[in-house]
Each structure stands twice: as structure tokens, then as C-alpha cells.
Image (tube, rainbow, N blue to C red; front, side, top):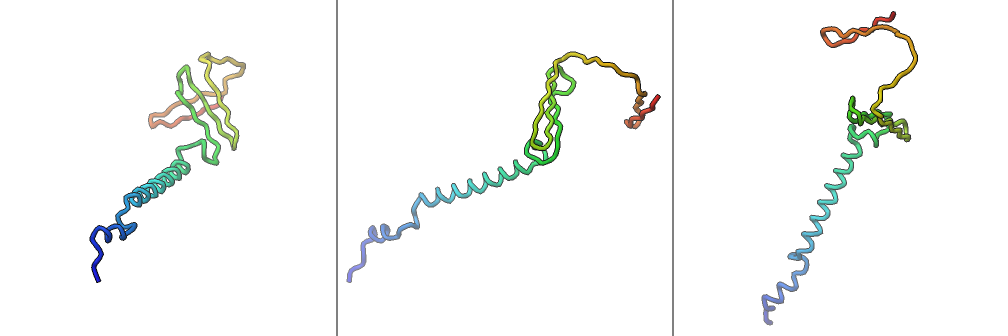
Length: 109
């Protein structure tokens, strides 16, 4: 009996040196990484729009283009500042003082 030539032995090895298999393994690893990142984004407590809690988000506070977004359950309400000072009717209810330690004290009249 004669031994098979080396070139035929390499061709008969099959899937051991197939470069496509390593690419498929890399794709699997990236899919797992993407799934983990998506779970982190959805469960992030700083993501108020995907949580079940009621949330108020204030963008640009104290500026003319201030916006306030209120999420109550599934309902989103957006308020935009017009830049005008509001007026209304009412009476003075008391005075608030800020103490040296930063606490606030309200004194009703």
C-alpha cells in the first residue's frame, strides 16, 4: 500500500483550518456583548423614560429655553418656557429663611 500524498491529507482535514469558523465565533461574541449592553441601557436608573416610576425632568433650569418633561405612568407631558414672567393673584403666606447650615425654615404669617 502506498501512503496518500501530503496535499490530499490537508484537503481531507475538513473544518479544522476553516477561517469562516473563526469569523462566526467573533460574530457570536459581539452579539452577546450587544445583548449585555442593551440590558444595561434598559435597566439604567438614570434612564427615566424606560422606568415604571413617575419622573420630572427639567432641562436648562433657570434659562429662557427651559423645558420640563413629566412622565406619569405611560403619559408624557412637555412644558416649554415662554421666557415671560408669570403673574397671578394671591396673598403672602409666610417667609422662608435659609440658615447657615443650608437648611430652610418656613415661618407662616
